[in-house]
Length: 289
Image 1 (spheres, rainbow, N blue to C red):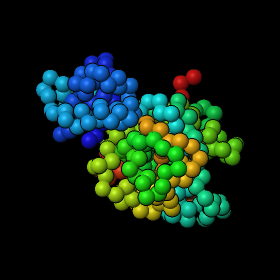
Image 2: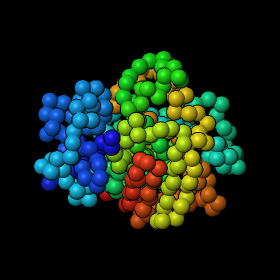
Image 3: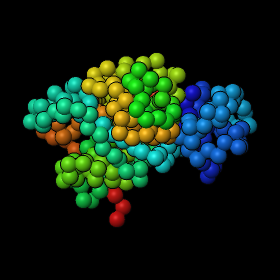
């Protein structure tokens, strides 16, 4: 299933995307108390009922008539993994950046979450705004000390993300949190594709373009740490909960590694696409003051 959060005629709802239609399931599951897609994914009874929802003329509308919103609005955790593709490691080495010997996680603050087609702000205080195409993961079944062998059973679904990065602010602190958490710098979507529709999350193509020019093009096969290893590692430290979201690293081609370096400017259009999951596309605009 592809599950979206969308606005139509001034009302925001949860819907199933099929055949260029979106079917409102809020009305069909009135007792599910759906805040966003995360609350649906974390409710086994509601998910079972959602799988039985058929196309219904009364509750369906053409996909191109709605505004797609961030599918998960306020997750308990928004965690991101740095330096997790072999090709990205290679370009980092060329820049003299040391490659970490273990997984390096940081938090993006949840207030940075943005819609899949909404504008991304270029902060006035940032001089080096960059992009990072990433595969996103939604936790469906919580747990602590999850084994690598069982880890993918805890995944509810996948999405497309851009880990927008204020590189100058990222460099100010070893935690990276400030440089990764400006408002609007976490566009995600366009929907959540449930895990049963993704045969192998380590065999997906990730592509990013700026103004139609391809900048990143790689495969999740090149991840240093697989998604299963990521979940196992994180859950040694913390309990992962339904609705938590992870973004899993970016491949080569980021602006800071280009020769010469190229950073995002107002007016740039950034598109991130992952095979089978759809795409997000955001325009960079000057941050309102």
